[in-house]
Image 1: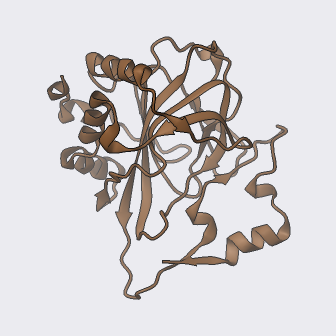
Image 2 (image 1 turned 60 degrees about the vertical axis):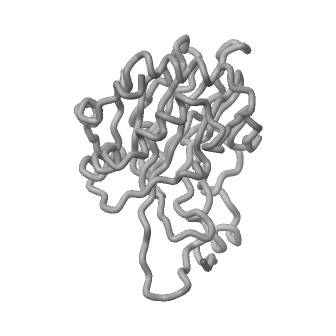
Length: 259
């Protein structure tokens, strides 16, 4: 089944758009039987654990132990982390030296339930004790029965948080890949209204490049090690990083981590 995934076929589906940041959206990304089998395995898998933050991520669970993933999901990740697929991403996004993250830090299997949401944010760019910088996110959705009226579409916002530039439905086999930096604002910020027996399911994997430094210690701003949550205009939101008090903003801007 996984042998039917032809990298050259995937290449034709990856077309980079620049607005609001480098990204590609593809429907029917994998062979239909592969996506369907992955969805079925996801539904039966019972080891996902709570990974939510009530203020920013509500009603969310996940699992990222690669060795224990369902077989088809593990093989999909094998394809996405293969040398051939990584070379394809380097070509399409014009990024050299892309590396996989087999620990699936922050990634793996994600699911959200009725009432769940993920507020708009830019992602962490560095893992602690690592010289890898995160450069790309890949999300593959696994929701055959999803109806857009339930909300849950991934939103891509401009860097100034003035406009939502694109919405991507989480329907099965939709895939989005996008550049990750401090201005790649995304999320599904409004509570989803799916039935209680339905889950919003996705596979999330991230790509890195290794930064070199002639010094034995690297210094980075603290805010680059965690998600930065963003407020939408004319919407009553929780207190986000862009609403922090003066000291907190000063800390994130000028305080550093050493690694």
